[in-house]
Image (cartoon, rainbow over the protein chains, first blue to last red):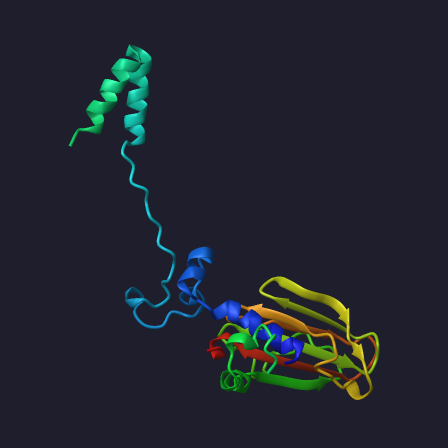
Length: 89
Length: 131
């Protein structure tokens, strides 16, 4: 196989191979490269990797409150306060 | 096919034949400066991602070629291969290769410094041709 053809095939493959793994790593998949065809919400052009939001036990505001109470009233009071807001519904 | 060929490892002969059938070739000779070789050709508006391979040869040794794609300079004022009748030897000559992920095409500028006949060959491999 000529060098130019081998190089072209490798380069072309990197353009079109839109495996989920590659899309997850690079953020680029077939849908991002090809023109949108069809109805977008049916999958045309949208294979971006999903982002998961990490579920946090405490919000930033809660942590600030705990720090405030701990600093004001001491570590024991801070622990109690943290337990209180961690178990709230 | 050579089993050590990295491309051949997962590309059967039949698949390779189908890929080769999808290659589009544009070739012509020019005798005057050409700011956009592909303008008006079959590859003027391909509209699909792919890989462009460019060869060029000149009957004189001072012809220059510049290639840009989407604001990216592939080569700037490179000297073309000097050969009688501007013959191109694909497997022997230096080639320029650029991939277009969005469907745009390269702009090939030929600057003929001293009067010469220049042959330019462009082969486009559409990425969608790959299995």
